[in-house]
Image (tube, rainbow, N blue to C red):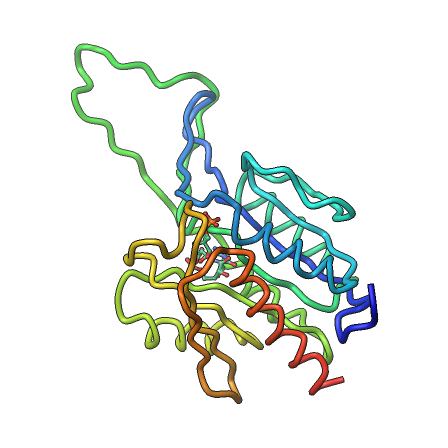
Length: 224
Ligand code: PMT
């Protein structure tokens, strides 16, 4: 492909929903299909970026030419991202990361019996990968997040932009039909610390990926 500001940039994209084990046959996860992240990976690749796609389990086929790293839990994802980030220019976290995981993941299948009509699952917070990566950021490296919100979209998203020290954040109101998890379409607002918010129309996820990657590309050009 012809030269773009992203040509030769080393880009990590994460996708899918992480899985937190309860027992050998059960886990906690979320509705992420991986479609949004895979669309970003495809778009980055088409602009000449060298793409590593770190994916939680999905039903999707990775775009050709992209390096795939498969992970399951938030802990796996954290390790893979932290390692890859050392030699990367841009991180895009489209994955839906579990915020909590079971305190105890047991080796044997949990049984029901006459005396357990209720079962309490104790959960503990997972590490915030984007927050931890922000501490490793060198000049020139960019971190990009997504925010999945069901209320106060812009307030909550702006708070994530600041607290996670992001260069750009893609906010989706996942309470709206056709927006966010699982479907083939999305509608997002792109936030940047030094730029007015950009609201896209509802469109298929590849079109949304193009609009997001356009903004990342322009940012790279401005800062390069
Ligand atoms: O996969 P699809 O079905 O196509 O759906 C797309 C999507 C809705 C999953 C996607 O558009 C999206 O919004 N992804 C982010 C979902 C999410 O985890 O949002 P959050 O607001 O909980 O997290 C904010 C950001 O912090 C995200 O970039 C997330 O990857 C990151 N995070 C979250 C928790 C955590 N422990 N570590 C993190 O790094």
